[in-house]
Image (cartoon, rainbow over the protein chains, first blue to last red):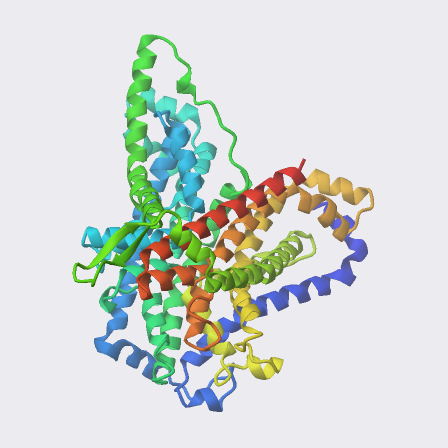
Length: 286
Length: 310
């Protein structure tokens, strides 16, 4: 890199300063998670007798065991629900986004500009506005307190459509579509066998971020669900956390549960590092 | 994420022989088929609820006579809007999110911009490691991020009260404490967005500035930041909207401190009106007002961005 030469002048003055700032930023970001790990290994009594970041008596397995047996193992339900809501929703949702984004970018059905404008507006509509009418509509349809009441609304991802349109524009050349057509492939077949594989890095990014979005969502499940068996893990942990003042024994459960709920996401991001970075780059620089 | 991709005229729109037109028409239909699943979702989970909220906001439930016949749906024009706008709790909520935004937006943006510029500078080693470390909090669900910080703030369990000498959950400190949770969660995400945009700044321009004698700070301030301005403004719009909708973090802290009221933010106000007080009209009116404020603010920010970049 030729910028190297210019930097040499101030290099040994600023390199330690730059790295010091990065170290501080990394500590700020990671220390709360370190705290989560050390705290998940403690019993309730150890919270007051040990420092926040030091290990007490190794109590992790006992905590995990209580966590999974509490209220007849409801934590299993919560984890499974989160996986179903987020996993199913992200796979289906990102496919729907990819199809619509591709259709807007590469086909010319009437009204596609209007659809795109509506999609962009949809990005800006606050969840708060949607929650009450959705609850009332779901009551009309008698699907309040069912899996579908949460699953269907969270499939809608206008920003994903916007991204998918950008990816389709950037990664699917018109010549390839033309060639597929000459070979006699129909539009639907062309999308699934030609365009979708070309858009894959982008679609994986939409999938990952929709997964995070659904795993994170709190307002809709809070409003639409009352049966704890249908809760996603964050709503369940939230409900336990509101009981701590009266029942301190919930504290280690909430902490250990939080650790177990965070781990899969952190691992997913680290493992898919290259994929989502490439996708974000394509989406943000266009 | 930053700028809309330029409209490209699709090849198939140029009309030609009847055969081509026939093919194009068939294609239109196929495109519609691909778009329909999302269209159905958009209509049923966004458009219809928004229209329904508008409708609800014009009515109220009233008990008639002795109340034997049950509540009645009464059209009240803009009555719900008037009562929300006159409600001190709603004002207080707006004030809280405004203050929250004033703390959160500058600290988050400056933090992520500085980190992105540092990562982009030639002197940094192990870029991947630093950016991943700062990004990790984004992968933590908001409820859980809120819980972790709530424990860290809590005077009995957490170290922060002893460290700072201030109770982070006290009346005066709870707002910056909540802003800190949001900043912790979003700095890394925006850092990556900005860093990605910085990578696209042409190297020749940066080198030319260096050759002219501009130092690292000068290059960052006069070349790099102006070049990624559209990306920064989109991030500002998303952060403004997110700030106005603040809900989860204060809801979580409510379990730890009495200083956060049930109507602490406008979103909590809507939740309280709808699901605790059961006043659908007032809740709908408040949520519509919130959406209008969101739309106005994003329009103002975007306008500001286009004017400045000219």
